[in-house]
Image 1: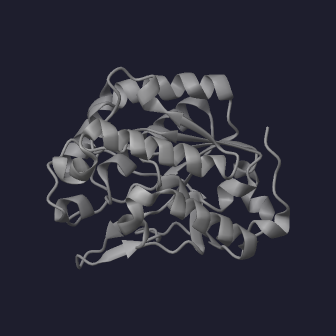
Image 2: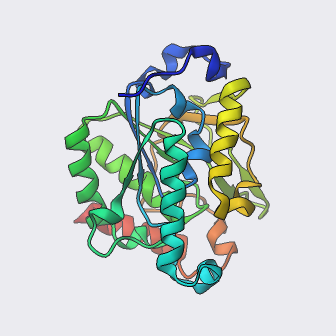
Length: 268
């Protein structure tokens, strides 16, 4: 078990530490891709006694547009894997790649198509680790993999009696404009972090570990994090009643198709 950094080296908070206690023991952070954990949780994970970061996909889409400069999809996936391992080594967190245990792995953008396999692998991991808490991404329509990670955490957390927390990355507003690091729906239980001093310097170092994602990471603020206990979502419907972010990007899936996959899993 790694050492916990001094309290004054981690966060300046506008909340009481007691409110965060569920997250500060052994926490599994379930994200979709290498870099999600840094954007959403790069400061709070420095405070955890034991942090295991589960990457649910290999971070490499099938579309050649994303990996052409690397020569192959497999080569790009390996770059992202090594970046994730390096980033987490800087803070003593443990990486877990579902591609190592799910036959054939799970490509970026396809997690919603592999829910049974992912759920089985995650349930085995949860039983081995016995985490105090799960931390995941919000159901906000930014990326189908983010939404699928939220769905899996919600289902398995409820099944296994583990509290689940969430944090936002990005979504589209009703007018089509982009929003980052803010929840599209408010529950009143949101906690906001101001990341400063050594914690901020370390988080920026984590950002820099993801060299392949520079253009993506440049759009986020490392000095802010928001968390809350997971909202009660209706996963049988798209997360927002307007055009979702990945629909704006004209990806192959729609919010209705993704939520139908969630509904089918729940029925099964």
